[in-house]
Image 1 (cartoon, rainbow, N blue to C red):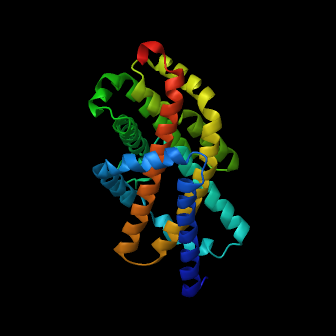
Image 2 (image 1 turned 120 degrees about the vertical axis):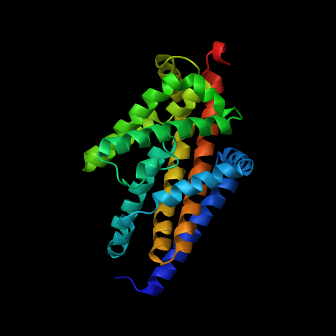
Length: 279
């Protein structure tokens, strides 16, 4: 078991690396203008950040965190792969469930499918609302889009159930690829008012314009989420409410920042392929 002194040094190194990664995105990243604009957007939505922080506080209340000390005894390459894998999965969920409803405790639900259903509905409504807010649109515009909110919620229910019920490396890759392919759906529903088939067609056109810039964004975002994954879990090793809340705040700020940057990237690509009748 790692000593308390080792925990302190490890926490400092990981948090320092996390801060350095944020600085690199703001000053050296090829898409730094998008990340800077994303920060400016967040400054104008303080209540939004507060709400997401509360969601992350509930999501981080996870008994699996207690298993971390065993993981800290692992050799470095294996532990690095675990952090990267967790970061990749968090990135997969980023544009579909940024508030991390899928990680909420089960609670007193009688059936896990009821739990997956309310998580999927909450995530669908939250994601489309966030996209509308970050695009300077009224959340009321989601009301005429309710026919598309329902299939999005059902897709999220399926993804959430598969993530909980399927185990193994192959299943992990299948779930991650499905999440990445469907990632633009909330954005497409927010900017296009039409049937779900036209939404899907727009998403495919969007991917044709987006995949190069999205690949660069994904690589560095996964590295940041990997750093976050370990840094916040090290903070959770220290007893007290303060470390728990600090972990949730750091997690919420990073997820919301990356989510906003992702929405802006899709906005920039979306205006190039958006049908004339929908502009």
